[in-house]
Image (tube, rainbow, N blue to C red; front, side):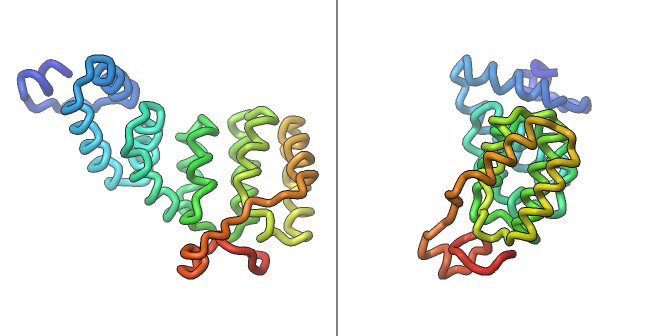
Length: 200
């Protein structure tokens, strides 16, 4: 398939799997084939706009391969975050891939509480260890969580019956520091996760 499409320039009807694409990217990087990497990035960009599943898969491939386009693909994921959470749970297995999304000031979430709930659910689904779960929790802006929110989320963490998540939650609660963005331009633009405002 690779020979037909990239060497003989013939149309290929078969679907290319994520594994096929990852292998192709690795081969292009090993051989220093910059032109092919550019074309792959262009293909990922076109594929990503077709549907939410493709967007998530293209982000996974670009992140795992270290392609610069991963930052471009992160944008629409952040803007659609609330509506594609189930797709993210299904297709993103590496917590490191979530960190840039969860830290983003552009992340569109209905509330910080729902973001923490997503992290707990994702960590439970993928059996993430304490350290990685805590790293994800520390991406959130605790200043936007009320005491009632924290109590409710603590109960939700307990309901997972996962010791790693419960310990991570206890450490998260024991950390007096909170991630806050004080970027003046962000605050002036009223970016929802910047500054320190009312609980949301």
